[in-house]
Length: 469
Image (cartoon, rainbow, N blue to C red; front, top):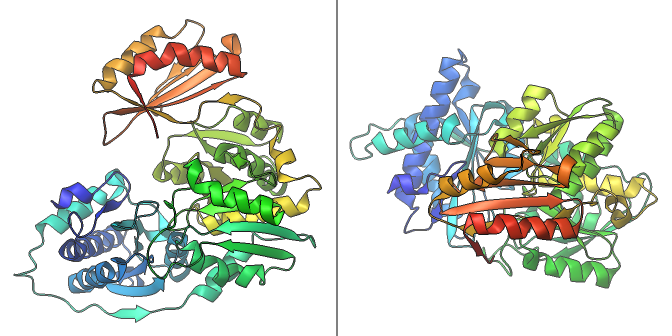
């Protein structure tokens, strides 16, 4: 039962049938043991390495799960720094700010309200995934017997770190004396708590900023729309409000406020790869020649523009574990992926929706152009977006696609299968397997719509049944 809620990057399931309070206790115990063992193996036995930061989102099940999680941590012998109701990036910040063993955020991110889960990080906010600690935590959690355990008595301290967090985030905000009006859809999630605390009510903490607030009420733990801004239907309220309010831009956040998607002044959704390219220029202006990390599904325009701006584009596997590692390995200043996660060197290489917002606002304020005009030359190729295909024999389909690749194409398997025939025939694609479902995920890009449609007609039949979102 416990194994069903452990995923590749986090722990998640419906409450209370898949994820329950007893499991939260086990996971707390297993996490504390893992983090303390990691610190001991590194030779760090200072008292702070007993500490685990714990935060939670606004879901109805979060208080009960956090209570049991904390019991598990303290009864294993760990100490808890409880930071309360916060966004996920707040936990990454807190772990670094107090320099402790790691942290746990109770959240199910963009999933519906009946879901909940845990995102875990270790020292310095480094991610814990299946191959970087989650498997050990699962083993620790499965082996502990609460009935026979002689519990230890770790301590619990409640800390308010909002002032320090606000100071940290607002380092990235500079409106250059300009006035910027932005629509924010908090999706009834943690952005509804974070944005007023950091940016002030309706933007009052940042001179020149005016925020139009949508769906900021998160007290009920329910959502007006699915808190997933990657689905266009969920951004509709943001688009409508931008036009109605004549705003400079709009931002729609996910449930735990670590991701956001931007809308320009005409209500057009901006792809997160395009936004990564735009923000890369901003960071390269301050750090000439620096590396920029991007996920391999991103538009070809992104590495082209990074190189044109004097930067070094670094292509990465998909997922925050890989993006964060690539930032660290390459001393990159910034990174982004198609999912709406944006990563910052000066934020411990971690992602942050709040810092993404601060940076986007700064870029808009600094330019004499509208956001739409700034991104138009970046969005110069035709893109399919990510399309799912249902098929049982995923490996067979990938082999067939690889065999069908023209001789002029280059092929790599860094993450799934990438076929690049852009130089010869003006197209490239990436196909990745779902970890949990009989699905293949296709991203296809071409120099124009005609080429895109032609290649889609050739590739799609090899991948199975196209799934409507």
